[in-house]
Length: 115
Length: 113
Image 1 (cartoon, helix red, strand yellow):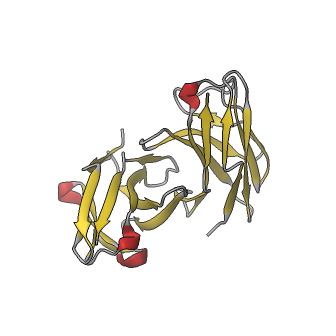
Image 2 (cartoon, chains in turn purple, orange):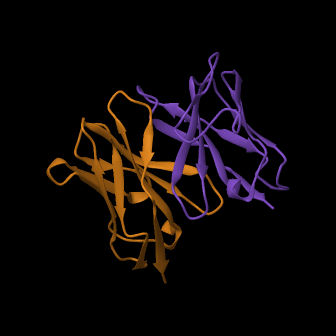
Protein backbone atom coordinates (compact mmCIF):
# COMPACT_ATOMS: atom_id res chain seq x y z
CA UNK A 1 0.00 0.00 0.00
CA UNK A 2 1.02 3.61 -0.53
CA UNK A 3 1.07 6.41 2.01
CA UNK A 4 -0.27 9.65 0.62
CA UNK A 5 -0.14 13.12 2.11
CA UNK A 6 -1.91 16.26 0.97
CA UNK A 7 -1.25 19.92 1.63
CA UNK A 8 -3.02 21.95 2.79
CA UNK A 9 -5.41 19.87 4.86
CA UNK A 10 -7.93 22.71 4.78
CA UNK A 11 -8.19 26.28 3.63
CA UNK A 12 -10.64 29.14 3.49
CA UNK A 13 -10.29 31.27 0.37
CA UNK A 14 -11.88 34.32 -1.17
CA UNK A 15 -13.77 34.05 -4.41
CA UNK A 16 -11.75 34.84 -7.50
CA UNK A 17 -8.51 33.51 -6.06
CA UNK A 18 -6.74 30.23 -6.81
CA UNK A 19 -5.48 27.44 -4.57
CA UNK A 20 -2.91 24.79 -5.38
CA UNK A 21 -3.22 21.45 -3.60
CA UNK A 22 -0.20 19.18 -3.33
CA UNK A 23 -0.24 15.40 -3.24
CA UNK A 24 2.87 13.48 -2.20
CA UNK A 25 3.23 9.69 -2.36
CA UNK A 26 5.85 7.66 -0.51
CA UNK A 27 6.56 5.44 -3.52
CA UNK A 28 6.68 5.75 -7.28
CA UNK A 29 3.27 5.29 -8.89
CA UNK A 30 2.08 5.35 -12.45
CA UNK A 31 -1.47 6.59 -12.13
CA UNK A 32 -2.79 9.30 -9.86
CA UNK A 33 -6.34 10.53 -9.65
CA UNK A 34 -7.98 13.71 -8.42
CA UNK A 35 -11.52 13.62 -7.03
CA UNK A 36 -13.98 16.16 -5.73
CA UNK A 37 -16.34 15.32 -2.90
CA UNK A 38 -18.98 17.98 -2.48
CA UNK A 39 -20.69 18.30 0.92
CA UNK A 40 -22.70 15.18 1.66
CA UNK A 41 -21.97 13.75 -1.78
CA UNK A 42 -20.00 10.91 -3.25
CA UNK A 43 -16.72 11.19 -5.12
CA UNK A 44 -16.55 12.59 -8.62
CA UNK A 45 -13.43 12.01 -10.69
CA UNK A 46 -11.91 15.25 -11.93
CA UNK A 47 -8.97 13.89 -13.89
CA UNK A 48 -6.38 11.17 -14.23
CA UNK A 49 -2.74 12.22 -14.09
CA UNK A 50 0.04 10.10 -15.54
CA UNK A 51 3.63 11.17 -15.25
CA UNK A 52 5.00 12.63 -18.45
CA UNK A 53 1.67 13.22 -20.15
CA UNK A 54 -1.17 15.67 -20.03
CA UNK A 55 -3.90 14.97 -17.52
CA UNK A 56 -7.11 13.43 -18.83
CA UNK A 57 -10.19 15.33 -17.67
CA UNK A 58 -13.66 13.94 -17.10
CA UNK A 59 -16.76 15.47 -18.58
CA UNK A 60 -17.60 18.70 -16.83
CA UNK A 61 -14.05 19.50 -15.79
CA UNK A 62 -11.63 21.61 -17.84
CA UNK A 63 -7.94 22.30 -17.66
CA UNK A 64 -8.37 26.07 -17.36
CA UNK A 65 -10.36 25.62 -14.16
CA UNK A 66 -8.44 22.66 -12.71
CA UNK A 67 -4.86 22.64 -14.05
CA UNK A 68 -2.89 19.60 -12.94
CA UNK A 69 0.82 18.98 -12.86
CA UNK A 70 2.58 15.63 -12.57
CA UNK A 71 6.29 16.38 -12.63
CA UNK A 72 7.47 12.99 -11.35
CA UNK A 73 6.27 9.59 -10.14
CA UNK A 74 5.68 10.66 -6.52
CA UNK A 75 4.06 14.09 -6.76
CA UNK A 76 1.12 15.92 -8.29
CA UNK A 77 -0.67 19.22 -7.85
CA UNK A 78 -4.22 20.31 -8.54
CA UNK A 79 -5.04 24.00 -8.82
CA UNK A 80 -8.57 25.27 -8.33
CA UNK A 81 -8.66 28.50 -10.32
CA UNK A 82 -10.86 31.57 -10.08
CA UNK A 83 -12.77 30.03 -7.21
CA UNK A 84 -16.43 30.51 -6.43
CA UNK A 85 -18.47 29.24 -3.44
CA UNK A 86 -19.58 26.31 -5.63
CA UNK A 87 -16.00 25.04 -5.50
CA UNK A 88 -16.28 24.44 -1.75
CA UNK A 89 -15.57 20.73 -1.47
CA UNK A 90 -13.13 18.15 -0.28
CA UNK A 91 -10.49 17.44 -2.89
CA UNK A 92 -8.87 14.01 -2.73
CA UNK A 93 -5.95 12.56 -4.56
CA UNK A 94 -5.49 8.84 -4.94
CA UNK A 95 -3.07 6.44 -6.55
CA UNK A 96 -3.99 3.38 -8.54
CA UNK A 97 -2.73 -0.04 -7.63
CA UNK A 98 -3.34 -3.57 -8.78
CA UNK A 99 -3.14 -4.94 -12.30
CA UNK A 100 -5.62 -2.39 -13.63
CA UNK A 101 -4.80 0.44 -11.23
CA UNK A 102 -8.41 0.44 -10.04
CA UNK A 103 -7.61 -0.46 -6.45
CA UNK A 104 -7.00 2.95 -5.00
CA UNK A 105 -5.26 4.44 -2.01
CA UNK A 106 -6.45 7.85 -0.98
CA UNK A 107 -4.90 10.85 0.62
CA UNK A 108 -6.62 12.47 3.62
CA UNK A 109 -8.19 15.16 1.49
CA UNK A 110 -8.12 18.95 1.37
CA UNK A 111 -11.21 20.67 2.72
CA UNK A 112 -11.76 23.89 0.77
CA UNK A 113 -14.21 26.60 1.72
CA UNK A 114 -14.72 29.51 -0.66
CA UNK A 115 -16.34 32.66 0.71
CA UNK B 1 -22.37 2.47 -18.76
CA UNK B 2 -21.46 1.44 -15.28
CA UNK B 3 -23.34 2.59 -12.23
CA UNK B 4 -23.65 1.82 -8.56
CA UNK B 5 -26.72 2.19 -6.36
CA UNK B 6 -26.46 2.12 -2.60
CA UNK B 7 -29.80 1.55 -0.91
CA UNK B 8 -30.19 3.75 2.13
CA UNK B 9 -28.21 6.91 2.70
CA UNK B 10 -28.29 6.24 6.46
CA UNK B 11 -28.31 2.97 8.38
CA UNK B 12 -28.52 2.76 12.16
CA UNK B 13 -27.76 -0.39 14.15
CA UNK B 14 -27.17 -1.21 17.78
CA UNK B 15 -23.76 -2.25 18.97
CA UNK B 16 -23.43 -6.01 18.54
CA UNK B 17 -26.12 -6.20 15.86
CA UNK B 18 -25.70 -7.31 12.26
CA UNK B 19 -24.53 -4.69 9.80
CA UNK B 20 -25.96 -4.92 6.27
CA UNK B 21 -25.17 -2.24 3.70
CA UNK B 22 -26.71 -2.76 0.29
CA UNK B 23 -25.10 -2.18 -3.09
CA UNK B 24 -26.37 -2.98 -6.57
CA UNK B 25 -24.32 -2.42 -9.68
CA UNK B 26 -24.85 -2.13 -13.38
CA UNK B 27 -22.12 -3.17 -15.77
CA UNK B 28 -22.07 -4.53 -19.29
CA UNK B 29 -18.89 -6.49 -18.63
CA UNK B 30 -17.66 -8.47 -15.62
CA UNK B 31 -16.89 -5.85 -13.03
CA UNK B 32 -14.43 -5.30 -10.27
CA UNK B 33 -16.31 -4.28 -7.13
CA UNK B 34 -15.04 -2.48 -4.06
CA UNK B 35 -16.15 -1.26 -0.67
CA UNK B 36 -14.38 1.72 0.83
CA UNK B 37 -14.82 3.28 4.27
CA UNK B 38 -14.37 6.96 5.11
CA UNK B 39 -13.97 8.00 8.71
CA UNK B 40 -14.64 11.63 9.65
CA UNK B 41 -12.10 14.05 8.20
CA UNK B 42 -10.15 11.28 6.52
CA UNK B 43 -9.68 9.91 3.04
CA UNK B 44 -11.15 6.64 1.84
CA UNK B 45 -9.73 3.29 2.88
CA UNK B 46 -10.23 0.07 0.96
CA UNK B 47 -12.26 -2.49 2.94
CA UNK B 48 -12.40 -5.26 0.38
CA UNK B 49 -12.54 -5.96 -3.34
CA UNK B 50 -14.07 -8.53 -5.68
CA UNK B 51 -12.08 -9.46 -8.77
CA UNK B 52 -13.87 -12.63 -9.95
CA UNK B 53 -11.88 -15.08 -7.86
CA UNK B 54 -14.23 -15.99 -4.99
CA UNK B 55 -17.80 -14.73 -4.67
CA UNK B 56 -17.51 -14.29 -0.89
CA UNK B 57 -14.85 -11.72 -0.13
CA UNK B 58 -13.44 -11.08 3.30
CA UNK B 59 -12.03 -7.71 4.16
CA UNK B 60 -10.56 -5.83 7.05
CA UNK B 61 -12.22 -5.16 10.41
CA UNK B 62 -14.47 -8.24 10.15
CA UNK B 63 -16.39 -7.08 7.08
CA UNK B 64 -17.27 -9.31 4.17
CA UNK B 65 -19.28 -9.02 0.96
CA UNK B 66 -20.88 -11.51 -1.38
CA UNK B 67 -20.99 -11.06 -5.14
CA UNK B 68 -24.32 -12.27 -6.55
CA UNK B 69 -24.36 -12.02 -10.31
CA UNK B 70 -28.02 -13.02 -10.61
CA UNK B 71 -29.00 -10.15 -8.34
CA UNK B 72 -26.25 -7.76 -9.52
CA UNK B 73 -25.53 -7.14 -5.87
CA UNK B 74 -22.49 -6.80 -3.66
CA UNK B 75 -23.86 -6.22 -0.16
CA UNK B 76 -21.50 -5.55 2.74
CA UNK B 77 -22.04 -7.33 6.06
CA UNK B 78 -20.51 -7.61 9.49
CA UNK B 79 -21.93 -10.00 12.08
CA UNK B 80 -21.51 -7.72 15.08
CA UNK B 81 -21.28 -3.94 14.90
CA UNK B 82 -18.79 -2.02 16.97
CA UNK B 83 -18.90 1.64 17.85
CA UNK B 84 -15.74 2.17 15.83
CA UNK B 85 -17.57 1.05 12.66
CA UNK B 86 -19.49 4.34 12.55
CA UNK B 87 -18.40 5.91 9.25
CA UNK B 88 -19.40 6.51 5.63
CA UNK B 89 -19.24 3.47 3.36
CA UNK B 90 -18.91 3.65 -0.41
CA UNK B 91 -19.51 0.89 -2.90
CA UNK B 92 -17.58 1.25 -6.16
CA UNK B 93 -17.33 -0.48 -9.53
CA UNK B 94 -14.83 -0.56 -12.35
CA UNK B 95 -14.57 -2.61 -15.48
CA UNK B 96 -12.23 -5.56 -15.64
CA UNK B 97 -9.05 -4.20 -17.15
CA UNK B 98 -10.14 -0.59 -16.65
CA UNK B 99 -8.92 1.89 -14.10
CA UNK B 100 -11.82 4.30 -13.97
CA UNK B 101 -13.87 3.74 -10.82
CA UNK B 102 -17.47 4.81 -10.26
CA UNK B 103 -18.50 5.42 -6.66
CA UNK B 104 -21.93 5.06 -5.14
CA UNK B 105 -23.58 7.85 -3.19
CA UNK B 106 -22.45 6.40 0.13
CA UNK B 107 -24.20 5.04 3.20
CA UNK B 108 -23.57 6.55 6.60
CA UNK B 109 -23.54 3.92 9.33
CA UNK B 110 -24.55 4.92 12.85
CA UNK B 111 -23.89 2.55 15.75
CA UNK B 112 -25.92 2.99 18.91
CA UNK B 113 -24.66 1.96 22.32
